Image 1 (cartoon, rainbow, N blue to C red):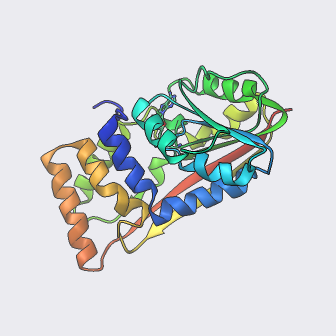
Image 2: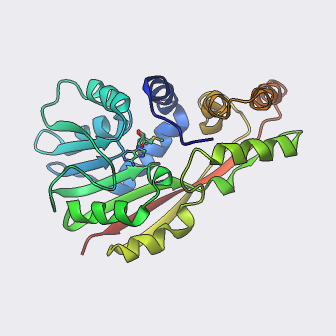
Amino acid sequence: MSQIEFNEQMAAELEAVYARRDIRRRRALVHEALGAAPGERVLDAGCGPGFYAAETLERVGPEGSVVGVDASTAMLALAAKRCDGHDNVSFHEGDVTALPVADADFDRALSVQVLEYVADIAAALAEMRRVLRPGGRVLIWDVDWATVSWHSEDPGRMERFLRAWDEHLSEPSLPRRLSAELRAAGFEDVEMQGHAFVTDDLTDESYAGALVPLMAGYVGTDEAQEWAREQSDLQARGESYFACIQFCFTGTRP
Ligand SMILES: C[S@@+](CC[C@H](N)C(=O)[O-])C[C@H]1O[C@@H](n2cnc3c(N)ncnc32)[C@H](O)[C@@H]1O
């Protein structure tokens, strides 16, 4: 199996998932940790459907600005639509390992659930450092998919399903080495925070509930569909359980 292609259909599905409760909670945690202030210039590397860009525009105000970069034109189209009407935002197609922006041009740079798709982490972090001004703040958020604990009455099938899902990523447990990678890239004051996303009510508003159809669609086997049906049966019986840890890393460019 290969990495997810963020084509039009996947971009639309992800956009719908990202409007849900748990992802809104995640964005609130990111905004708090990033701390963008009025008048600042912020880069979103791997901006996806543009939720962070739109919300960051409110934080930086008319004197500030936001630039979004993504490898997917479908994602960029959604992001541009979301930020329509603002003249202090721009979106560019590009790779996080070769950002199409100038040196030292940003006060803050974020990249949320993007680096786990990237093969060359050192190159991506070197780019984040290059584009920040001295004293600028970086924020990287990724999931350690090995922390997923998910109830099923067929643990073997659950395990096979999760391993198949891992194949959509370059590195399913990237957070394990991100602190060291950030320091190696030259960032100071590197901090890591873990945030638990847990639920015993697998509604669409929960992180896992929202992802069930998308994950089953990606894995794409009959067994994956059986797995998805079991999850809705468990939910109907009030027996759902899901837990995982997502990690927020921050650092400063000296
Ligand atoms: C899971 S989505 C996250 C989107 C957004 N950061 C958010 O949290 O709302 C991952 C995004 O990373 C983008 N992406 C993956 N690999 C990339 C790369 N090497 N360079 C730029 N964007 C990339 C995808 O196109 C997709 O939009």
